Image (cartoon, rainbow, N blue to C red; front, top):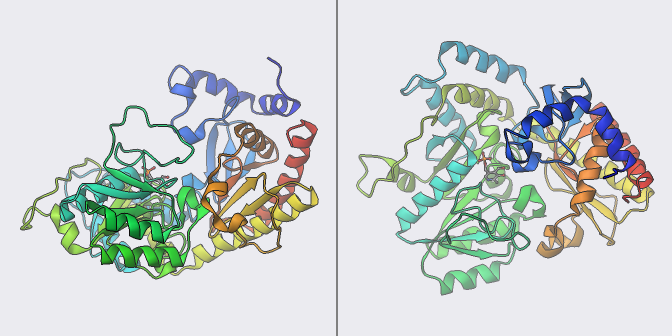
Length: 445
Ligand SMILES: Cc1ncc(COP(=O)(O)O)c(C=O)c1O
């Protein structure tokens, strides 16, 4: 099969990555270890990273907007995190017992998130969301969970269905979960659903909107949801795996002025190492206490409160506590969005870059207003047009073209960090202009 000149250049440029990928194919399905790392004809292999940059095994330097799948608000290998991890690794990686470090980690979270009266650490965001739902069901004695289409809460059986709705198919190997799934954004429908269904334990959501804010939600919706759930005796679970410590030191709850009953955390929480947590109301969390009067929810987990993750987490949370890192990452994202839109307009493309925090998304097939404003949301934030899948071939080709120009992002979206500089932004924007010319030359746009 012949490939486009763009793909041919990608293959030539990243030949060592291709050779490594051929070794990976007999090891991993699709040759990758995470569904979002799949790329045609192969992904680049990364050798090392620092700040906002990473280097492929060919030695090609790229500006990174994958940022550890959002875990690295401070950039790659921040010196304070590296130092804390190195010191801890030499002390112990798993003492098989409690540590003062995990207390320090918990206190750091509690200082930033006042809704966290008690906390338990787990090994990932998936585990944290699973535990939060189990606690809510036990606390309320009700089986059903209200969730929103297109909101992702990890890949557990109970939570992966509907995370790509309305466009995804059924999840294979997953029994029918006890959920009620609604499109996001419609408070009237939620009110109606809670009135009709008396068996709902909790509502869970990504507070800035599904898929990292691809379909943004704002203050009014979150405050409305808080009010409705409280009135119906339904717990509110904020999944702050992305937003926690990123959209503000106290996450979306601080930004939007709400207080969740339970909060799901991961990513920045553990400073870029594996780790997650559930925190929230003491009366709910105390279901985990053996001494509690109510039923005890069991919570084992070999890597709960792992000291290396704790060391990284304490260091990272200290660095993000005053809001400077978040402001910087937001500013970079805004500059990137404004710059991308200028180039999109110059090129006459029906595309629009948007985002509400340190994120950016490009929506293709858009022919609405194109204001200069970096905070403009296309389609007024409507769910259907913003959640429609982007053409896979275009996303893949854009990623190839951007990698050739020295930038890595998730195809048509990315996440910024406090480590990105003005020079990184300028390089990104000129890479984007050149990438579009490559896509045109290949007949892709
Ligand atoms: C909002 C949200 N919740 C949960 C998860 C799952 O976290 P993890 O990948 O640590 O299991 C993710 C992962 O990206 C996420 O974005």
